[in-house]
Length: 608
Image (cartoon, rainbow, N blue to C red; front, side):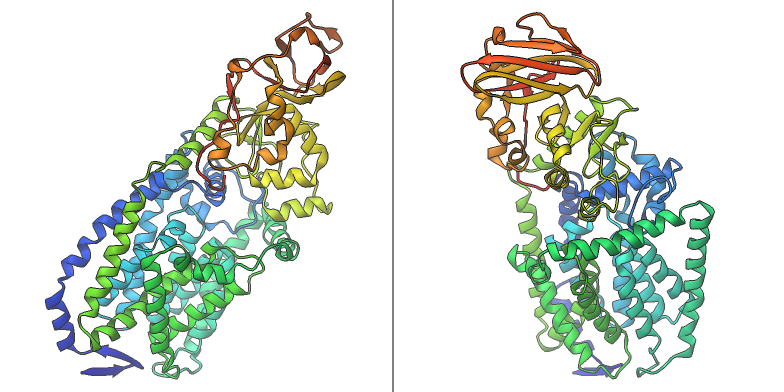
């Protein structure tokens, strides 16, 4: 038997009782234990840090230190997430290495718990049974694709909670609260603005039983006015308005116009990612959500809870598809909206085949078993460990007053060498077109360079910066370049010149073997070598057969050094000259004293 209420089908009590005899609810809750173990492993060790996590940690930390976004540091996102997590960043963000950022992952766990609770509440308001709601949520929590993005410290954490809270308030007809929290969603994540507008239009016509203009819903404008005016007053009071306009409006607009033609269309691959990656729970959730959307939208004339959720689900996909630049994590809210829709489909399946609940439970269980199995690999945690070593090393090899040039912000507690302290594609394109001043590395060389794909792209379009960086720094790690000198030494007589980028005592290593190393022969290509090939490029300097030192004559600031010198004492800005007369090609590395190995790299392939 089935009953119809508000345009949706509901399982008759007899079928629900039969399903309950087959599978106890405690079995569903017990599955949360392996899920929690898997998520904890991802949070702390299995998942390497992403660029956005580091960016948002630094923004939160700077706010905790009293800096004002847009005025004191450049940004192009809206700031609510950073203010919410600033206390956590102050309390947990003082360490070195990767751990401060990992602490922020843990700090956002209560927010995701709140979001999941609100999703269950929304499904409950649509009169979905507890079992169907829990099964749908277990599929979400068992999805590798969703969890991999959700656990990262991103602006989506607060914005998703605010959006789902707004949906719950709309269902309860609390219009002022809806306006406030939906505004908060945009203030946390400006990407949600189009979807928030769609949500506001839909709830404006959310009648008791049919879609019709609801004048009471216009009260949401009061909530919007409260949130927007408070934010605007803060911007003007703190002198942040010009920087806000420049970062959020000017930069984002130019980024979409300049970067979009260079970006491939990732929409279809994004939607097919769970299938491509073998995400069992994700595939099941998508199929059930699509079925649930069909059940809800076939009675579209009914203005019910699930019709609203289904329309927002479709709108969330369309909104991402229309973005000029899109990434997989942009669908995070889409995944959340799938939970109530999947609950509808599960309930429909149980109504026709009560044992379907066991099938869904089995799918969730298999997915979790696969996820846990993937953690038992020899490379478990290696990528994050490498990031931690690089982040720790840059901290230990620089002083608190030093500046570091960093494409992402890995040098957590060091001053950025460039006002634009991280380098998204839009900034590079703007600098290339002369819309902003590029980084002048020769005028004030950084104490270190944290190299990644963003720095690589920057060096490809600014040849003077490229030449200076490649010959005045050496890669202690593939992704950490420290002050030094390097060059390819041709056979015969030659004369090379540098200007030292930092004070220090340096050891000279010159060897014919180095001539074949990618850092000497093809330095730009070296930075992109990944996996086992990169790990094989490490250079143990004290094992190198050295070039005859008598063939090399050093001159520092016009002072000829002792013949055959194997060490140099340099000051920042010192003019360094090398005169050689050798019979075969060789490579030269001049590294800070004490370094015995360079070009260290991880075996894992991941985006640094």
